[in-house]
Length: 466
Image 1 (cartoon, rainbow, N blue to C red):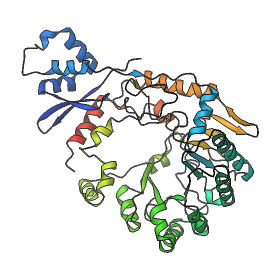
Image 2 (cartoon, rainbow, N blue to C red; image 1 turned 30 degrees about the vertical axis):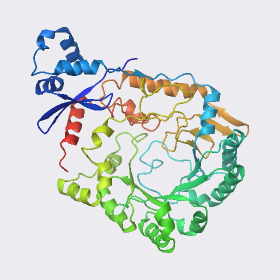
Image 3 (tube, one colour; image 1 turned 135 degrees about the vertical axis):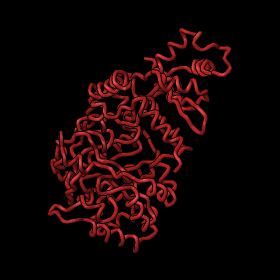
């Protein structure tokens, strides 16, 4: 399927442009062409111009729309990439070559965060399985022996996930020993995401093995009030005490290995979080609440998921205090115009396609190009953000069971959604949405960017004075 290109008219500093969504660059146009593309559907406009040359005489030097069209016509439209039928060997090869393994070692957590995706705001709650150490270490062994037997010696990252992984600290220790034993010549980096409640008890071991540690914290005490213990008490003071302890006792490790993750909701915002973490000389990684799997018409979720509205003064001060972070979070005319239309091209598998010829639909991973996620039960998923219903296989006592029919259907469905639902979206050539983690949002059409929205966003970016 050939994808039809889209063009966004832009007015900036008394000049006129068209932004080419497919190829991601600007054409200079005159005012007449600008208004034509702004007021008329792109495809109908192109058809009308091609059929009626008298409408725009080529001799009219005051109008360069024909120049624009001739330039556009020299650019080959890209085809929608069609996945092949994956075979078991393709999936196993991708598992062998993945450079990031994430192990869920428990579903238990010592906190009861109100917005947790396993909590009351979502349809499915966690099963609270503590995780069997022997099974989890066996999952890891099977993947590592695949790598060892195929002589894969590229750098590897092994992350531990929960629940709260430090509840199962003995499992973490055994996994570290196993990995170092099976792959002695591989540079292995260990990592975890933790709520830091138990971090002070195990920090010496984590430092010894050079762990990267991401601490979940939403900012100051007011920002963090949804992160509570099971008895309803706030966790902020406990967590901050542990953070301060590590910073004071192990300053070099704290500087190099500690990062922070912050969820944005109605009690938190980027500015408060950055001010809070500045005392540690850190800038947090921001994320939003997942809308997939939420209970229908949940007033509580809608309330929590409300975002802070930044005024002009706040943004001006934020840009001065955190210029680099501002660029990634808010409009910046120098680089955001490109990133608005940026698409993610995956690592190819056996040279299946070439970037210059095809459009890779959406932001979904291409098999296990980024990582492999193993649940506490041995289910194989693309990553920890994926919905648990998208299983690619299972690790059992007998080895790897690969769900080929499911896998092929997943990627077939991505193509069908893109072909049938996303063609009118102005971000269809650069869609960041992952089918496996944003399935509900995509199916409900909540992520569609129409022409009017695209024009507004692009012109706001280009004309931003902040």
